Structure formats: C-alpha cells, structure tokens
Length: 395
Image (cartoon, rainbow, N blue to C red; front, side, top):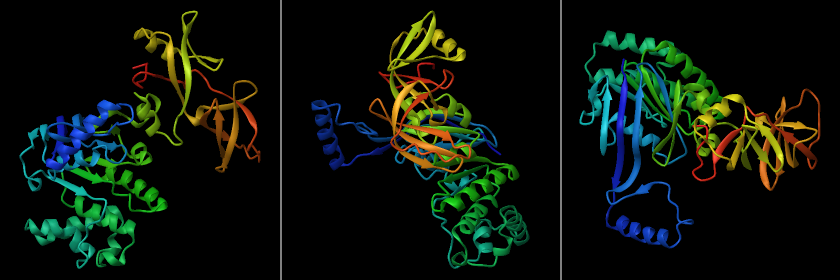
C-alpha cells in the first residue's frame, strides 16, 4: 500500500478581468472599513487561494479525515491528490514517487464520490468490474475480485440487479465496491455518506470501520460532519479558509483544541464561551468568571508556566457535558430545556451569553424551564483562549 506526503501544497484559481475588478473594489472597501469587510478565502494577484501551505504526512494504511465547513478547501485538497485538480505549487508524493505531473489513471488511486455515479444500464456486477474490464483483466480474475468485494460489503445478493432497484445505502456500497476491486494504494472518499438519511449514515459509518480493517489500503476521507471525523479517523485534519487549523487524533483534537475555531467545530453541542480573567494567585493560575474562581488543573498550570503566560483577559471555553448544576456558582436562567432521554440539554442565559449544559436525568422528570440555576465546572475542563488571536494559551 502507500504512504502519502503533501509538502507545501497550494491551490490558486486564477481570476479573470471581472474578478480582478471585484478584487480592487473589495480591497478599497476593506481599507475603508476593515472590521466589517472580512473574507474567508485569501485573494491575491495570482487569484483566489483555495488551499494554502498544506503539509501532511499520511502513513501507510492510515485513515485520515479532512474535516471543516463548506468552502474550507478539503475537497479541493482531495481532488489534487486524485489528479482532478492541478497543484499550483508544492509537492505530492505517493509511495515515495512525485505525483504532480502523473495522470490520474496512473496514480493507483480510487475515489468514491458524494453522488454514486453508477452506470444505470449496467448490473451491480458490471458496475463493480467495469474498471477492471477496460484494463483487459481476465474474466475469471474480475469475477473473483467482484465476488470478494461484494462479500465484504454484504451485497452479493444484489449483483444481478441494476442501480435503480437498490436503496441509497446499497448504491453507496456498490460505489465503494467498485473502488476496492482495483486494490488501490490510496482510497479517496469525498463525503460519501452525505446523501443518506441519519439512520443509514450511522449504519454506513459502522460498515466503513469494519471495511478498513478488512482491506489494506490508505484512506483519505473528506467530510463536514464532525461525528464522522471523530468516529472514523485515526487522525483528523481540521481546516478553515484553506489553512490547516490542527492535526491530531480525535481525542487530542477534542481534549486539546489549538484555537477557538477548532474547539467550536469539534464537539456536539458546541463548546460554551465565557468572558473571563486569567489571574495568578499564590503562584497558581486561576480563571475568574464574574467573581466565580476556579484553580486550573496541574497539567494546565505546567503548560501555562512553561510558556510564561501572563495574567490577562481571556475567552474561557467549557464543554456542555463538563458543566454541572450546583448550590453556588455562576447564575443563569434556563430558557429552553430539551429532554434527550438519559439527559437534559439546558439552554441558559449566563451574563448575557447563551450557555448549554448537559444534565443527567437519572430517571427523574425535572422541569427547568424559566428557573434560575447555578452552574460550576472543574479546573481540568477549562480551555483558556487568547482574546487577541483566539489561540489556546496552553500551546
């Protein structure tokens, strides 16, 4: 199989005359009012920069997930690996071979798209074996590989049907089967589950986890769904506006987000944020939210001390499942109470900000709507972000 290395990859879409005029107008507007004229993607004299300074080493047989909001450059990056988009600058290596100028058909990769892209007039068997057929692979070998893939994906009983007779989940399995019969070095998947309903998505996620254990290939998977990223990836790459924000295991990214964007994008419901002060009392770092003080955990103390972080105004992040109700703490009013079975999601107003807490029901029916409550949290679950650049002050 294959190691994939992306070195300083950049993708720029050139601008025509109309876009150049628009850029001049945008530049003028930004100069006149820089705060209210922010753009997501960088626009230069070369054109619109969709992917910027992308560096990533993907190990052999690793499952990497590129995740981020729409327009962040993740699908563009995948298409550059596939050869469907030209690389503006930087180097792409697959199995140690420079691939920048290699044709897509010669890269030994397979791709599964969001749309199934199956031939409607062919049976499932013919769809899955078509790429091998055009390579003039012997018929008995095609049959063997198609049958093996069908067994792995549990679609053997559908081999003689046409796509219109299949459900969405079955069609997606066929599309995946068509890719894996080729034994590609790298399997690329561009939001393959986004067309499925919630129940089917959950089932297919489990199928993909089983699949990656049964086939020896390197996976690069693109999604905007952070649940897919957290459950599927060995490592996840969080992207925004063409830049990598953080690379790490799902647990690392969840527990140690490097900035406010990552902390808010990964985790459901989204992290809560408080205006707070980072203070130093008796040699210890303490966070103060409107008079409620919490001493940070020892590992956080060590990281902040190692960076000589000074006392300052901060944005404090705390995840909803780390907030508890108490007899004394930060006061809030419950606006909405959502019963989720074993827990209640409390949407509160705290110091003028929206805050969500996840409270266990423990089998009791409790009505929180409209009530005043006190909330608290421990020092090991606090994330301290800079007010200036929104980075995590621990890193």
